[in-house]
Image (tube, rainbow, N blue to C red; front, side):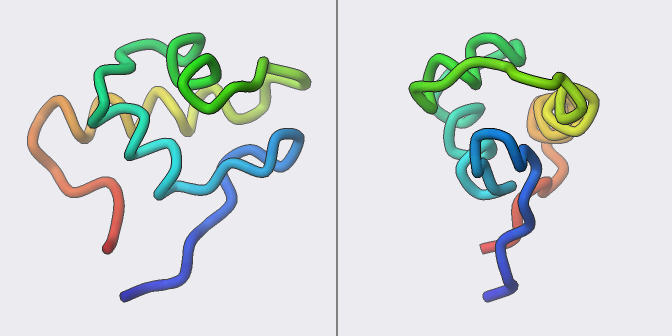
Length: 65
């Protein structure tokens, strides 16, 4: 199992947490934040979250377990 990578430093969200939110049905960054019970702050993580959403939607493993 690989180390978790922080995707959002403002909210302390890791790639695993974001991946779990996406697998739970979140399809947009705002939905990921809501699933993680937080809000976007600086916005620098939005591109990474969109990448995880895209990868998981295409069947690619975005999150290492």
